[in-house]
Length: 149
Image (spheres, rainbow, N blue to C red):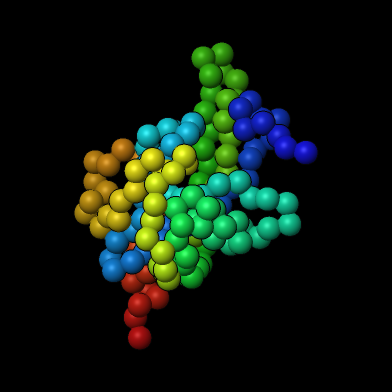
């Protein structure tokens, strides 16, 4: 049984991952609504029986072909979009994670129409999904902590 992402009867649970590699994070421009064309983290819906971490890593593999090792959760992000009448068109709760790149060169596809490895400075002015800048700040901070001896 699958529930529609458009005008859902309850929030959709998703997971995403900020993959860090040599001082940069992997971003993908969304290839589908909501927020089509905006840069975001690879991720998607959590499937039944999956942990949030498993979903984040699976979505990363499926969307961009990259393998990573999780550093840990970052924060939940809520995306709520209403139509002109005020009805909830999209409601997604995303469990964001940070990870270190392990292997694979990212590739574009239907869900990721453009891919960039960006530094903290590169994110300024980049068209991004709501809340992503705060998630990236936390991911970079977690990456720096994890790299300390």
